[in-house]
Length: 276
Image (cartoon, rainbow, N blue to C red; front, side, top):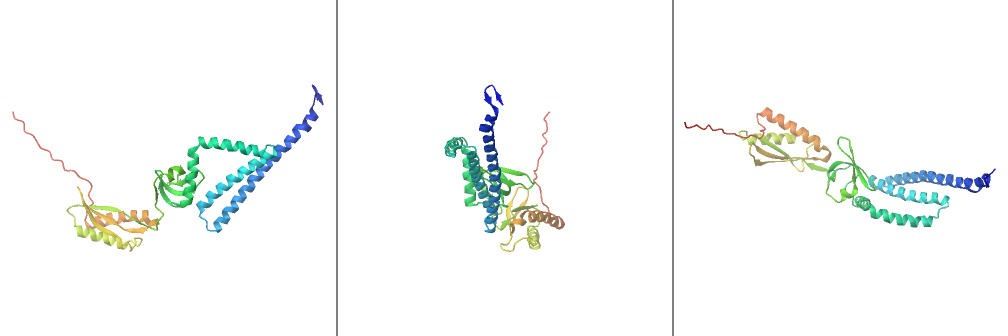
């Protein structure tokens, strides 16, 4: 068919069919290559798991490997379209430099993620406090760390904020000390109260014998005589034992007639006599 001097069949044969084949081939390379990349990363993670590699480190390496493979796949797909990959790499390098300068915070987050993986201040499953947030570490990603709070909220924190600040790892040690301040009234029997506290420490089998619980008079407060009660427990038992202990102390003191005073203030009122 010839329209206005153009041969449509010739146009199809010369341009549309070859470019159509190139586009289909490039898409096939990208789709199949991405599928293979996912499978390779999955195999890599399984190999690292069998080698007892930390799960958090395994996930981080997997993300890096997948990103690198994806770059190779994109370049291979572009080559199918006839794009000069050498020139594309030069362009990507220049663009990467410009983007890197514009996204310095992202690069610092990436570097901080590498440092977190190298020095490992925490592991997956640890309960930590970092960047003003508390939660269980789920994963250290390329730029962010995800944590889960006690009420099942997910928190995503940039790695730079975590590594650049103070990290408190509550799961790092096998044992923790419970610090309680228990007050009694000034009219109550100090020796009896201390004996009750000591008995409660012995009755609670989750409290460790070594190191031994410490019970000492800590302060003569404004409204109460305060004991410092400091038992040691396994880290996983901290909150259950703390709650149970407070409840048992209250019940035991009530049964023994020992008061737990609340802050009080005496107000003295004077009546002024008016002189007529």
